Amino acid sequence: MHTEVFKIEGPVFNPEQLQPAVEILKNGGVVGFPTETVYGLGAIATNDSALREIFRVKGRPADNPLILHIWRECQLKELAEEVNEKYRRLIEEFWPGPLTLIFPKRPEVSLLVTAGLGTVAVRMPSHPVARELLRLVDIPVAAPSANLSGSPSPTRGDHVFQDLAGKIPVIIDAGPCQAGLESTVLTLTDGRPLILRPGFVTREMLEETLGERVETAQSGAVDRPRAPGMKYRHYAPRAPVVLVEGENEKVVAKINQIIREEPAGLRIVVIGSSDNARKYRCDRVLDWGPRSDLAIAAARLFGFLRECDRLEAELVIIEGAAAEGIGAAIENRLRKAAGGNVIYVS
Ligand code: TXA
Ligand code: MG
Image (cartoon, rainbow, N blue to C red; front, side, top):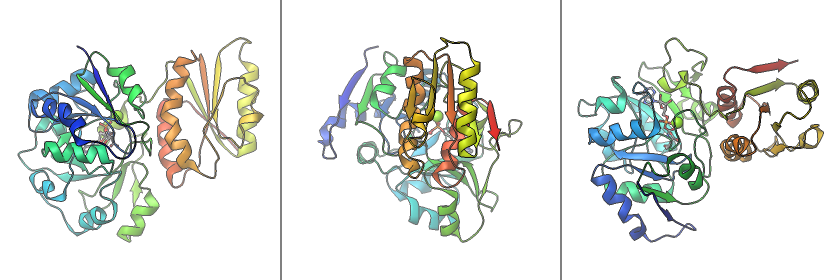
């Protein structure tokens, strides 16, 4: 299959450019498109063969449910059985934006979307191209991240091309995603707010809006994960990854010790903050920016994990971030990339 790439440059664009993608979606095909978080692989939620195509193209396990994307709130009533006061407050504050909410599902929602669950995940993206595409299609669009299952989520059009060229007809390339990490996934289905996947909408922000404590599900809960996606190894470059966390000076010392103890000539890549970049005794350091502004790190992270493959890394060592605010979302992705290979120094 030939993959056509439509490039959109700058914030102002001609909606005509989206027409081919709109036609493909309406006819039950899949399309790569930008959102403010990561690129999505979209298919309309009302067509089961289109939904199956998402799973086939990504190589995604069928028990990992999809997020439905809408552009206006009235679409929610076709999807969610109940939208109570707490949900209303969150929608008011955070939509459109990087917050996915889990609702009890309406019977019409395909079980392919929800992987057989009685709940459905919905979000309203804020990216202007995503919004226009969703407006033109005007049917909820199911979209996981547009990467092959297990590889880092795509934060640029060319990442989608790397993974899915020849497998999908169209990619809309609108440049780098602003956030660079997938949406926060929050459930309230048993009354208490629980973050299933941390993201740009932080626990602190949710607590502020809800006026109550918000818990974060343990992503190590492999047995019965609440967000089924949490149990798979994710975001991983080909090389083994080790994540080093703890007090800054000790982290730097530990990373340098690991470098020293590996055989000379091994292609090591270090991913770390600009505060520490020059302290690493390694010629391949990918600098994720200052610790004082983790939004920069978030936007760069997935690209760096892909860069490790391009550099043919044989070992990737990553400096951990903080555990608060966006740092919690970054840590969550880094731990998954490391597949549990985490060293804590104190
Ligand atoms: O930012 C994003 O959310 C991106 C863009 C494209 O919108 N999408 C995305 O989709 O990250 P995906 O499929 O890569 O991740 C969806 C996550 C998975 O962890 C999945 O298990 C969880 O949401 N999820 C979906 N439906 C759920 C449900 N009913 N209950 C619990 N978790 C659910
Ligand atoms: Mg994904």
